[in-house]
Image 1 (cartoon, rainbow, N blue to C red):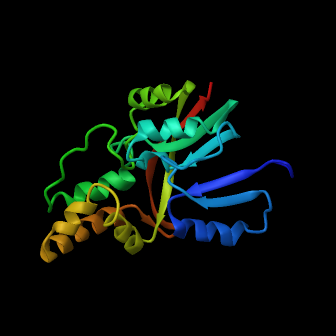
Image 2 (spheres, rainbow, N blue to C red; image 1 turned 135 degrees about the vertical axis):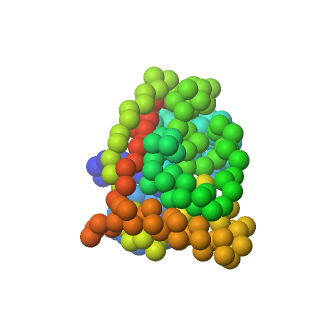
Length: 211
């Protein structure tokens, strides 16, 4: 960016921003703001590049959010972000959830575009959302890489708060919850290494021009 460039990091989570500020507070032209990018009043036509790492899938209204994001970019700007592909292509989350559902009843399949990790997995749907917001030359590049989830117990805790099994686990009886977690643990142990639980993952790298 050089000394004349500016970078703004925006996130709805103050916890994440607290960590970011502690790590990068000495960089003068890097600022952070607590913001819901779906509705935040960014400076219009101000940015050359808009980027996101696994964030844009969670907007309550993706159509409104991408319109709001689009108006922040310069006419010559572009957007690049990464998002998960389908749950089937991401066994790091799908396989433990499937194990839980050998004990618990699975939830209803979410409607396409429902906020969540895989809401932008369908290129046709995502292209329409972005094109309606004003983006052009939208390109999807698949990337398949193993992901290190870390140690088993923290992974299990994470999957009780996010993913397909999270809500069923919350509403389960104590006995069913323990049985489901035990089944999930067996699945994770099959992929456990000395470096942590390593499983396949699949993402899209999405690129687009603003005009």
